[in-house]
Amino acid sequence: MKYLRQLGIIMVITFMGEMLKEVIPLAIPASIYGLLLMLAALMTKAVRLEDVKETADFLIEIMPVMFIPAAAELVVSWGILQDILIPVIVITLVTTVAVMAVSGRVTQSVIRFEKKRKEKNERNNK
Amino acid sequence: MKEIISNSAFFGVFISLVGYEAGLFLKKKIRHPLVNPLLISIIFVIVILVVLNIDYERYHQGAKYISYLLTPATVCLAVPLYEQISLLKNNWKAIIMGIVSGVITSMSSVLLLSLVFGLSHEEYVTLLPKSITTAIGMELSKETGGIVTITVTVIIITGIFGNVIAEGVCRLFRIHEPVAKGIGIGTSAHAVGTTKAMEMGQEEGAMSSLAIAVAGLLTAAGVSVFAGLM
Image (tube, helix red, strand yellow):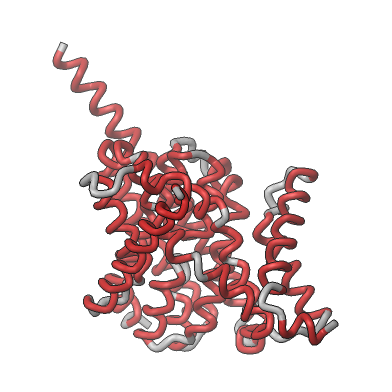
């Protein structure tokens, strides 16, 4: 019954996320509210890690499969997309590389800068 | 035969899973980043639908039960994030700065390229939320007057592309810190990219999950400003 209970807890939190979406008038999906709720529940120990762990790992593992139906909808939207296909492809490729490189590099630079500063402080304290 | 397929609630799930298994098999045989199980399964499903002349609606009546799991699965991304929470505590400054710079890069490069291609305002706002999770992106597209179907398609293409190129981009730009890899992938390619980050490692996966939520929220806050710029 372990997996059923784990799935039950995940569904309760997902449902609470849906309720929050109804109450709060922002363009934020239920899944993000649910993610934040789950994180809060784990941090406050309202939900223990072992209460959800295996089922959560399973759902995350099979997550790529869940994108197949939405992506296959391309066969339907192809008609509208055709007219602006070239700009859309160029913009998609360029921005994806740019965003990944910029946010990755900035994060790495700040991590390394902070590391150096800490080391310096430690040396000065000695 | 076609009758059976058209009426089956399992056909959609069946060909999606077969496509994914085929992708996993090919990935094992041919170790190349372009041999991506998700990409292969999507091509597989589209080819089957086109060749057998099956309506998307028919496919979707079964396949929707796979998509149904997407919301609870996204909620579950909190679990690896919680397991790696010390990473967040130790690197929060770098993480925030990385995601903010990524979100600004995303919207300003869409703006710039839309100007270059002479796109209409409608087309521009359609592309504006392309890097973030589908659920938030759809809402923002609707709100700013974009074409929601295209937004969804472009978000998915972005995710698949990000998933495929993630390892290459990290190598090319010498991004070695696992935290930085995860933030870069999650900020640029949302949940589809995150599945790749999960494969790369626990730290990468956790940071990528975090970036989906934060980048989505920041984009929601900034999109109205950018929508007014063109």
